[in-house]
Length: 581
Image 1: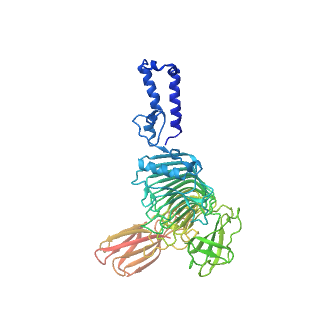
Image 2 (image 1 turned 60 degrees about the horizontal axis):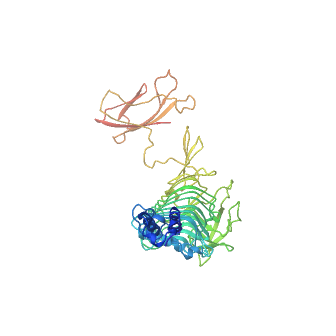
Image 3 (image 1 turned 90 degrees about the horizontal axis):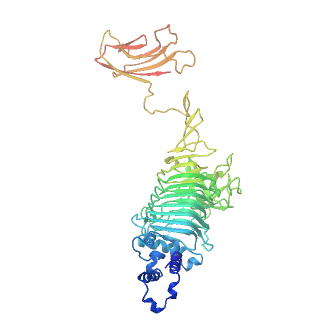
């Protein structure tokens, strides 16, 4: 099969040669051919060769033709185009079979580059398979669109994908680039098939009108270390869905790397990651997602779980996510229309209503609070990322985001999340540690427990919301330890004090509380020692002394030195803990 470039050159070169010969071949009589020069015979032979398939290396191109080294055809054999495999279906506006044929031929022939620069409508999924051992395939498609006859979906989960990757053997080393992907409001974009894919890079520049742009969750084999990039994804139902498969051999979706410049205005969120998707790395900007979601707090999750349908007696909704956060129970409920505060209708679910399962029986649950997108004071909170790891041991997601209106879900205290938005000061969640700084107060939060700071730190103080708890450890000031030998007269300096202006409110005394312990049972003491700020008074004043086992050791103050002497054992161990109070 040839393409237009062969036909063009096949016409051009003989015509040019005919002009070069000046039309003289037509003027020759048959008898004169015997007298033709050797050069003229060579030229005629060249014309005949260029018109044949064997001359395509010079004048045209045939996809399955072998060409000698150094020819144009040999150079072109390093890649193929989708148009090389155009068929009757393509002529009718359906490129599904042509794209599939191009991919299969490239894999079989060991060609690593397949290009399609046109707009390709599809009537059925294109299956990418046979790329084994990380040998690699670079597949670049300009525009991919589901045609008007694509089967209609009825939920977030039943759309037919435009591209399926994998078969009974996993695909690796795939670099897929699609400039524009349009699901026509009824198709998934890309989904794993059977063993699925790993160690690959998928780039979707502009994605819109898809149900899910990229979805995992039906694979039967580990699908790990996949890179997802893109430019602008909008007006889809969901951007990325990652989960473990429901059958097979450890069908995880671990360590995906997602970096789309802007994921915005998608019905049920930008990204939904579930158990089996641990170690995912997320970057990019997110906003205006989740407008078709109602977020309700219920009195318990008992009898409720993701995937079930619930009703309040007037509306039915699928539970997209059921999770615990800060000891509260929450449901993300999928609505059939926009219920955001600024753009949509009121939520179907309100505080005080009762929820139960739509099908079968379940305990009745009371709605304690109901929220929807854009219901905060500035109207800027949205549900961009759903962190759905309820019942899992951990998530360990890494999210470093430019702008993100909201991340919701369970086990977020096991992840590393740092993001910015215009209304929340505690968007940083470093394994559950939230951090804010007003410029004068550094506040620390345990986000797994509360949105109230547990510690406030300024240049003047450290304030804990409750108590400082050291369990059975020391409240340590300045610790001093010495071994002092027996003596009837010699005093040894155990510690020295120093007058200080630091942390003094006015001109009050510097007061120290000193605890002295020894290795001899029952020998200990407690002292209050003060230093005056009056430079004329040199001796510290002992305001109070409580000594157990009187006579076990003697003490005195000499200048700013606290000294002891003992005549009980040889030697005695002294330990002093000095606290400024």
